[in-house]
Length: 233
Ligand SMILES: *Cc1c(COP(=O)(O)O)cnc(C)c1O
Image 1 (cartoon, rainbow, N blue to C red):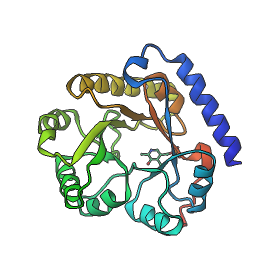
Image 2: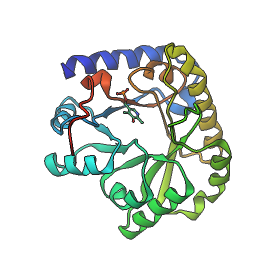
Image 3: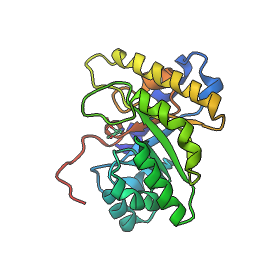
Image 4: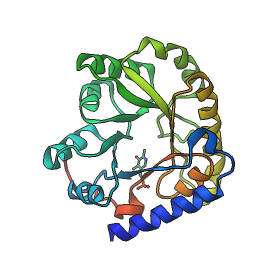
C-alpha cells in the first residue's frame, strides 16, 4: 500500500516538474518529498525509510521525541507545525530542519538553544500568504522587519521559506499563493544567495506547488491514508 502510494506520488511529482516554467534556475529540478507521519504509529517511519524516503515530517515536538525513542533517529527530520518558544530546546534536539519559524521571539529562542548545544540549526521562515485565520506564519511587515536582524542570530542558518495554502474546493485557487511564495523566495535569494529550500504543497495541492517552483513538498494523507487522531503520544 505505502509502496504503491509512494510510486504514484513520485510519478505526480515528475509530471508536475515537467510542467514547471523556468523555475529551475532558483529551485532546481529535484523535489524533496517529506513524508508527513504525524498521527501515525512509529512503524510508518521505519517503512518509509526502508522505501528510500529520507525526509520525515512531524508537527509536534513531543510526538517526534516519542517516535525517535521508539525507533531511533534515522533520516532527516522536519518540524512543520507551530512551535512554542518553551519547546525550542526539544525542537533543536530532535529536528534537523525547523520549517515553522514564525516570529523573532521564536527565532531568538531557537538560536539560544542551538548555541547551548553547539549546533547550527537549519530553519525556514514560514510566511502567511494565504491569510487563513487559523494559520500561523509571518505577515509581510513582520517578515520584512525580521530579515535585517537575521545576522544577530548566528546559531541559525536560513535555508529558505515555507508556505501553506488555504484549503479550497478548486485547487487551482492555490496557484496564486504558491506563485507569491516563489516570488518571495526569488527576492530573498538575492539577499541570501545560499538559501535553497522552498517548502510548499501538501497532499491536496503539491503538484500545483511544484509547478509554481516548490522544491520541498510535505505529503501525509496521499502516502499513509487518513490520520488516526485517537493515537496518543
Ligand atoms: C499535516 C501537514 C501536512 C500534510 O498534510 P496532508 O494533507 O496529509 O498531506 C503538510 N504540511 C503541514 C504544515 C501539516 O501540518
